[in-house]
Image 1: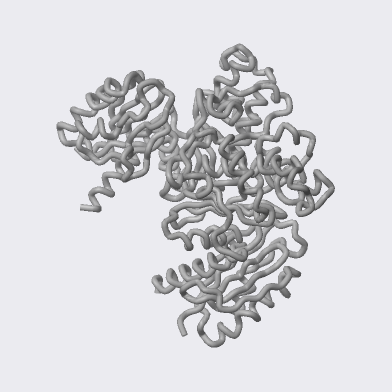
Image 2: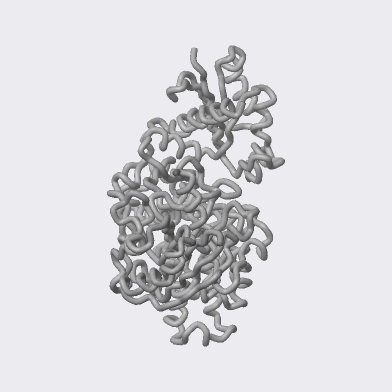
Length: 298
Length: 298
């Protein structure tokens, strides 16, 4: 049996753990709710333990909700840091895992893992951005072999956006910034405006174009600042088929041809990897890369 | 005599050419207005020719106004591309220079050159962003040894910003986007609002805080998307001493502690290199790097 690689997608509401082979195929996976750190992380350890004990598991990559500390050498490397999520502030994720699974581990954000998965799937891509638009908004970005981010990972969900003329009275729902991108375009903003959950809002509602107007601005920011080859939109909001075309239309109007981008059907896309598995595939690939780096060092 | 390195800062209004040594000291320089491409570039060639003929000039780096094509292998690599500046659209800058100066050349944006100069000066820096706020707004960004930009260079001056509540009626002056960052915060926006040139506007005018509000948003975008160690502001607007503190104050309010940044006096700064020479020093260093890469390849 060849080497196996582990993925932990540590989300704010659930954990998805999986074991894959060197071809990045999922061999086994499990999902459980995100409860207190010790009990949740122990479930992850228990899932990987049989593969670890038989000696087949070579490395693990964790793609986590954030903010997290990814600065190697930092005292809190491998921690979830200042999250408002109860019990998780200053949780030592990598330390907990390493105490029972003595393996090379890679630690990054869930959106970086997803970005990496999408990049691995299309080997022609050198750069891309992966946004998730759901309960919150985050993004991961890659240029060459590196994740974008100098001292830490990106937090692209919290930049400010030009307010839509028909939405100036909406205060926004971000507890830090009120009307940053997440505050006006994440799922909860829809319910805050309309009193109705997103999935129950009629397609004719003007709120969809308002939301698309903001998401398109995020794509303009990513385009002009990072100049990626592709921007991928995952998350519950963008899984609704009508949204991507609304975003493409607004994006074209906003960018107004200022820089050349590919045909928008190819440039602004939903994930190529089905079943929300971008992060899992990305984690397998990152775990494999980490393993190979460790082997090279020896 | 050791190897010498050439810098061309190709600005939209003037060219600054300089020759420096391996310690990045300026030995000789010249400045002339940016006229038609052939005559302007010939002046640059004439300046470098004596150093080239004596065999001391090892490489040249060009930091140019844009947009430019920096994609090695592209048919229009080394060109200024779609600029509205008369005569300069599709001007082959590197081709013109190489025809008379057969040397390794590096080609990037003027703001990338400036960013590189500031990074070289402070060897502790691994990542930074350099904005110029003047007639237009642009930025260069570095992470590690790489300039930020997947398929091309950044265009950070044209992202959208949340409009200031007291400025909603101002349409903005960007010919592409009306009220993008450049349209509401570059120098010409001041005159468009007040009818008075920026240098003649009283310090008590509310327009300064409006402008600082937008520039602070640019810093928030750069902070959250790129997570740099420092953001430097060059250009005429920021050379006014009162502006940096206004920007710092607005930045702190907008970011609202969401991510940790250094003390703002250290984080948001004017250039450390005096006399607008950041780009020249950066070009010397980039030319030297290019020369060393070429030597290594042989």
